[in-house]
Image (cartoon, rainbow, N blue to C red; front, side, top):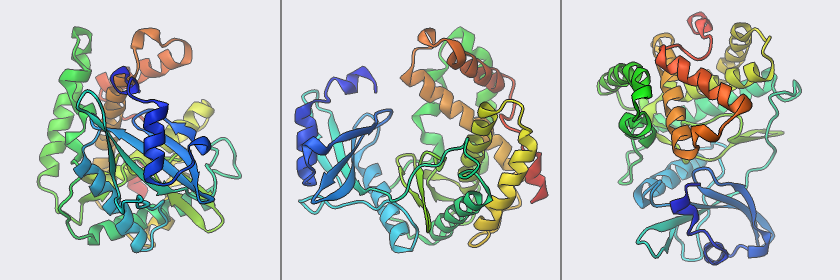
Length: 339
């Protein structure tokens, strides 16, 4: 977490956040602190997830839109970790801070099941791939039917991580900007002519293997913090980027083209229970994969100092930088043409 935010996190703030949802302070355990402070805790013998979001990251309207989206998916039958009302019957509570900023506090049911292990073939197998596709297709199906609400999420092009002046500011970033600018311009132009509820709508936007739990009945999706108005195809791109990229890092000798084809075949079997893949995917997804790298580059520049990274991390980000500069699609995707 950035220092201007972490300076305000304290036992007093944690205690105040817990009080909104009757969570036992002593039960808190940290789950993450990259973009939000996320804890698991216990309230009346029930496990919950408590999240504190600084106002520099999201505003209240965006968070309410996220809560409404999750609740709508839950009521539609999707397996998602649903929001929990506070003692004040509110989805979002506020803790004001001395610098006129604040933390927005919300709470979710703790998903049942467990994380999956990409290195374990008993986890990463056709059964999981079908379930993953089924859950994604189900969310896309109901997103297309969701009525517009007064609270709104940002569109993909409003992401702070696509601010090239902020995250590619130096002279040595010139080649990155020269590659990124026409890509983003092209995508934004295409997006403005897309049909709401057909090609674009509200999506999860980060449904990688770290954002769902596997259980005996399927998978439960959580962490909708990145949900945004976007192409449905971008959910697919993010999943492919994560899955194929992770498997490639675990086994550098793996035939990623063959693996991606296998994954996508079974993923689509599940996805087609609700939605058909769209004809523009083979053309659009490679562009979205390149954009994914730019988004992650912005996140990297915001959260880390490149000078202090060394070893494998340094080489990993150097390869990513080179791919952005050379407009290289980060994973092999010729298998998209097969479906």
